[in-house]
Length: 133
Image (cartoon, rainbow, N blue to C red; front, side, top):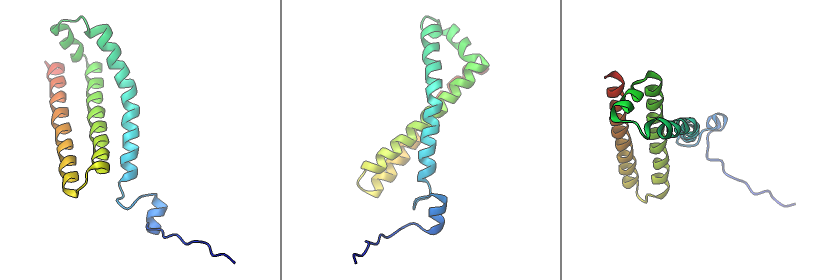
């Protein structure tokens, strides 16, 4: 009678029930990548259409008035948030997959997150400055 090969399961019973890996964050990270991607689709289409139809031939004053409209400001802020969150999460995966040492992974991830936060904050302040003005 042939023996069945035994496989070792490295996850705890609680981890199997919850569907979490060893780091307990992979599922959430994967899910948020999909959520931000789905949010970016309509937001990017809206912005591209607006840029071509409204902003392409607008003066600075007209563009500032357009950004200052509440609905446009809210959608621009959502676009900014989703873009930089999606970018940081995607680059984190690339760094985790291709960086050799743990130090370079940590430095790369922190650098990417810091840049995304700073540029996202700057973009948010620009939109709010035009919307409040």
